[in-house]
Length: 123
Image 1: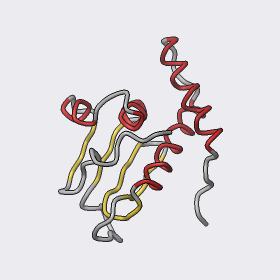
Image 2: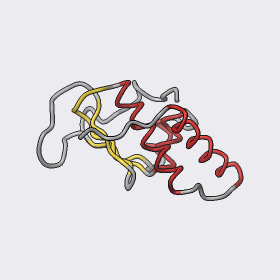
Image 3: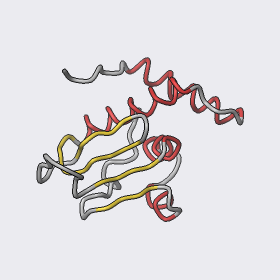
């Protein structure tokens, strides 16, 4: 069964709520954070479909993207992992991929584990 698609209105509302919490210096509501992360992962999957890179944002979600060799078992050869705040920042263009990676907030392994060509997204 395919995962439930997040409607654009719900996704944008969750992103707005997360941004508002950040602007107020408070922690976002977990449901808003989860929805925002999953919505942006969904947009990434739409923009760069494929199975060669696994993007993980624990504990909220993961998606396989980017055209290339298909991965079917075990740990994928190309993995990108980061926390929710970093994912939202790089996916929306608030922070540049290279800056977050240099700061150690993105863990990327594999020859194809670079999302510079597909980020930022336009939510």
